[in-house]
Amino acid sequence: MSTHEKLIKRFKGKRILFLENDYNLHNSVGNFYNWCIENKIKTNALFRIKELPMDYILDQVLWFDVIAFETQWVGEKSYEIKEAISKLTDPKIILECYCYKPTWYRKPKGIKHTLFTLECHNEDINEWQFDKLKF
Image 1 (cartoon, helix red, strand yellow):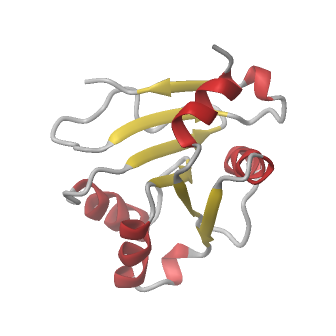
Image 2 (cartoon, one colour; image 1 turned 30 degrees about the vertical axis):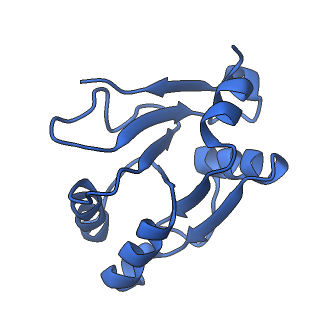
């Protein structure tokens, strides 16, 4: 199965929330965002998350099926979000888009969510690597 087919199977009919530290989606997460738009997958993005109230971010996270972000979870707010998401009882799909190395290689114990990594730095989807993390 091609990467495109795997992504369609996993994300068609889902709502994807992009969390971004910057003012725009670029690099890997931008490539995935563009793919979502081309395939008519519902999306929204929160920009400059370090400046947003935590309650607002979590309200948005609860409404969406998939939470997508680009490596790395750096900065104080990112750690708060990561911790808050890990405590949610409503299972989510968490997708880390990365350029060179993902933050996670294995699913951390105690996490109820389904975790995936997507290496999508190259604009050519045939070169993307989509993996589900396991314990």
